[in-house]
Length: 89
Image 1 (cartoon, rainbow, N blue to C red):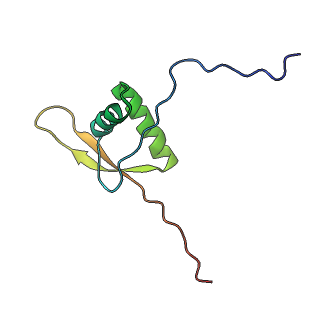
Image 2: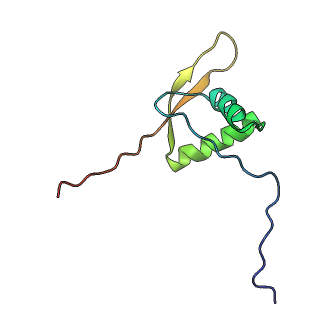
Image 3: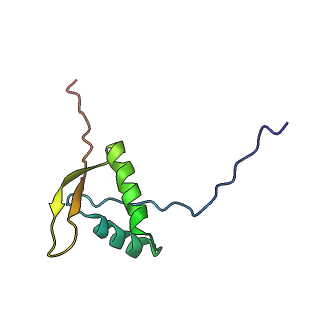
C-alpha cells in the first residue's frame, strides 16, 4: 500500500503578509505595502481573507472606520502587541 506519499500542493504559493506595527492601517495600505515589498500582485480579496484569518487568530484587531468622500467606509486595523510576562522571582 501507499503509506508515505506526499500530497502535492495545488495553486499558487501563499504570500506572507507583515502587518504594520504601531500604527493603524486599512486593507488598501496592506495591499500596497505587500505588492511593493514582494513584487507580487495580490488581489484585494486575498488580503481580506488574510485579515479575517488574522482577526480570528488574535494577531490584529479592528479599531475603527475611515470614511472617504464617496464609496464605502474602510475598516482600520491595528496589530496587537504581544506582551511577555516577567516574573519577579
